[in-house]
Image (tube, rainbow, N blue to C red; front, side, top):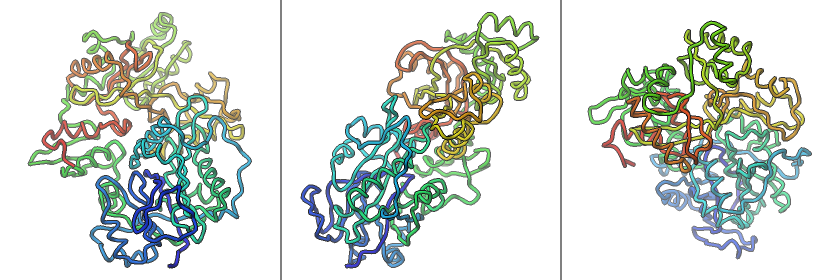
Length: 584
């Protein structure tokens, strides 16, 4: 049997690996002597199976193995020597993965002199570690792997799970899995591969992905392996740039997969002219999964029409025809929203319409710290938070008037920024939103750190989240005694915005399961008061697991994609077409 020099890894979706091999040989990891080449090697990976195609000498058996894929999983046959021949045997069921394969020869690898700052990398140890990896997979929209599986394989010689952890919080912010080919199939080429590289899109530390890749390379180098292979989607320019920087080089290797719902976007491609944003895409994908007809009306603006059983509903992202014009106008005007909620006996901050400078100054003097915002607007545009002097207030009013003629002055309230999603008068998701921040490395300027963080946030959100280099960011930096050109010391965390809006670089952290019953109740009361079927409420709270709140505003078109893995898109489509609930 000839072993081709070839591949593995995908940045976009999940993977792991198991202690056992299946196929013609089933070998316990601890019993593996690593010297006898095996045939038809398959590794159970939790998300699916890694099928080492070059260990199969019979393509019929390889195709038959792929056909045994379990529902809801994703199998990958890689190191395929004759992909065109294998594909021809089942062209309706299989497709050629549109990924490049890269290889790092470990004789050429040189460790970095820079050490991680603010985070550490170690092997996965506990169930809490595994649950942290699960959260990252969900945020990256990767195929999930059970925590039990990750824990069960934590001491495997076949594979190794590494995680990156925030030193201050202990939170898992990155993960990667390495597969040792010597233990998998006694690889004559003495290779290894890297899979499941995933970094929390909200991590503020620079270089987490690079550190995880280097950790795998150094781990396999210490084991005496010859190379590390990985695969990455052909259009993932950011990942490819990282691998090339580390001296990975393209090699001619291919992977075969089955046509299933998980892989659909890889073998179907986008609809002609369809370039929807993430907020529309998550709904359209759920509708198509149920067999609901989708007609894209205006991709740029996020308009589409869903049709089922002769009934059609036009949507703009999560705003549908089920939301009345009255309900929408109540949410659109922040002053009206406040009055409606106040009449419903909900807690709201003091508020006034900006007028003459003397009147504005009296409001500021009364409350000490205020927020200036346009009466109408979204995505945090024109909002200035925590104003403490009249000069800054008047500049903020002028900036807000660029977005709306009516400008509101609002009492500043301390607390965590909480977003609650209510669909059909039921709370579906909740998340704490945090303002954008960067972490210094002792080398790069604040400007460079912001630019790098913006690239990471934009890549993770389809371009929706970016940190603007504007007057508000300059104000936040100045308040901290910093400027764009200052070098931030290694490990120092610097908040660069006051508002926590995703569109200005803010991060969002799911707290649905921890939400206090009082907050659940007030959110449903508020939705009924506004008489709106889908809404996102912004509240300030002491903590999501405690009572006490102040309502800030309501969003009639909340971004459902921001709350994965909570089933926001599923509940939205349930609302529109309740007869399709439960359709797989």
